Length: 121
Image (tube, rainbow, N blue to C red; front, top):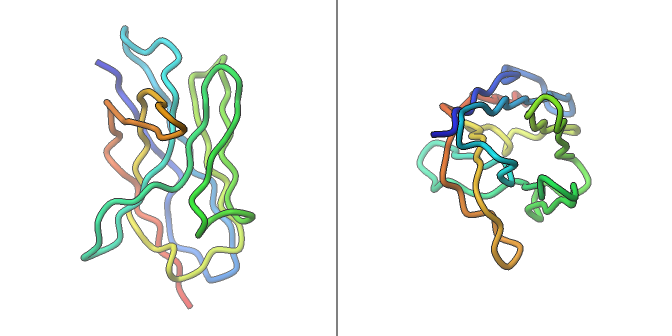
């Protein structure tokens, strides 16, 4: 079982920045690929960004390209999401995920508890 613990959410004004962190632990964590998803009220959970753990290549949803950056620290088993130029539409609960990548799509098998990001206009 992989445990994922997120931190870094909060309230920010439009145009501001936040950085989310997700620390992975557990005996079964062996360099799973990782990523972020988000879920706004009344909407389905959607993909935000993912990273191939070993090589570091990243993939982003169109809505966040150029504003969000995903990175990882292999020594700390931690993945980050730097979010810049935040918009009210970015308001959501952000979930960290770990899993496998198939055909460039992250397939989660573990989820974090979620962290709230609220962007005020």
